[in-house]
Length: 449
Image (cartoon, rainbow, N blue to C red; front, side, top):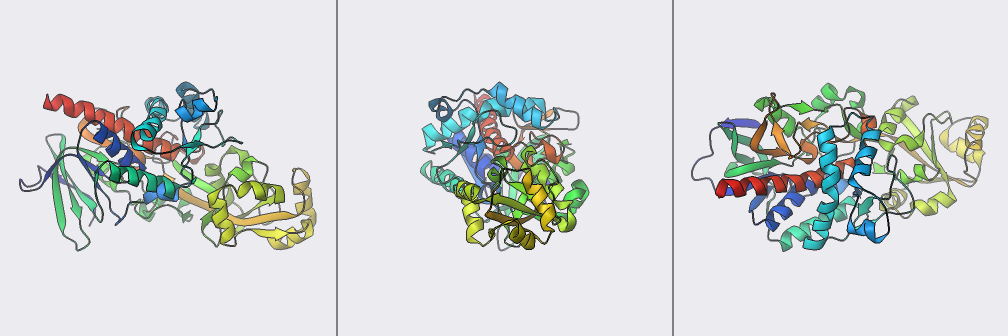
C-alpha cells in the first residue's frame, strides 16, 4: 500500500489530537518535547515497533554554535560563522533561508534539550571535521547515535509523550488546503485514523527506495545503502501527490569508509588526523580532507568500487576513542601489516607503488588497513519548506498546518553529494524539529485565542 492523499477529514469517530508527528527519530522527538514545553499535546507515529531510524544508525554528532557547552570550553563561534561554513561546503548552493534558520536554532535547541529534558552533551575536541572552522560538534557521552536516541526516548517517557509504535502512516488527509488528519497501518493490515489540527512530517528520506535512488541519484544506484530501511520516500510521494514543491533531490550524505564485508562504519576522524585511502593499485586517488560524503563517489569510481584506509599504530590508538571504530575493530575489519611489503600483499598491489604513495605521508610501519567501499547513508532532498518549516506549494505559498523537517524536507547541503557538511543530517533533524515546534506553538495559540 503506497502513501496516499485522502480528501476531506477523517471520520468523526476518529480520535482528535492537536498535532500528529510522523516519525519518532531525533526530529520528531525534539519537536514533541518542545511542544510539550509549550503545553501542546501531540502523538508520535512510528513505523517501527521501537523508534530508532536514521538517528540510531548515525554517529550521533551534532554541530551547534553558541551552546553552553561550547561557551564553557571558551570556544568562540556564532550562528553566522556556522552558516558561512555550511555555505562554503555547499559552494553557496544551500537554501539560504534554511541555512540561517538552522544555524540560529540548533544551539538553543541543544541547550533546551539539556536544561529542560536532562540530555547531556559533550564537545568533541582535538580535531575539526571537514569544513568546520570551530570546535562545535556535540554528542552524548556514549558518542553514538543509538545512545542519542536512547536519551531522547527517556526524555520523552519522562515528559509523558505518546509514541505509537508499529504505526506506519499511509494516509495524509487534506481539505480546503489544510491537513486534517492521518491514517496509519497496524501490523495486521488494519488502518486507524487520527483527526488533528496540524501535521509534522518528520519521517524519512528516500535512500531505502531503490526506484527513487535510480531516478534521482543514479550515481549511487549500485552503492550499498547503509541507512534505515524506513527511508522509503513517503514524503516525496505525498509531495508529488499534493503538487508541493520538492528541492535539492540530488543532495545526499554518502560515506567513503564503509568496511567490507563487515558492513560497519570506520570513523573519518582517522583521515582528518593523517590516514590515507589507496585503491587496489596502491595509489591515492583524492584529497581525503575534502569530506567523507563525496569520498563515497570517489571510492566507488575505483577498480571494483574498493579502497583501503591505511594508517599506523599511533592513529590506531586515536581511533579507538570512537565507538564506531571500536565496533569495526571488534568485527575484524582492521588488518595489520609489519611493513610496506606486507601491506602491499594484503592490498594486492605492487610494493614499489605503495612505497611511493606512503612516502608522501607521515605514516610509519607497522601499518593498519581496512578494506572499504562507498555507501549511501541518507538523502538530503525532499519537500521544500520555508524558514518556519512549512511545506511550500508550487507557487511558493506555504501550507498553513502541514510542516516537514529532518529527512522529509530539503536540507542544507545543496543539490549534490559534495555539499554535505559533517553533521548536516542531525542539524536538519534537531534544528528543524525545534523550529517546527515553535511554528506550531505560535500557530495553534493564534487559532485557539
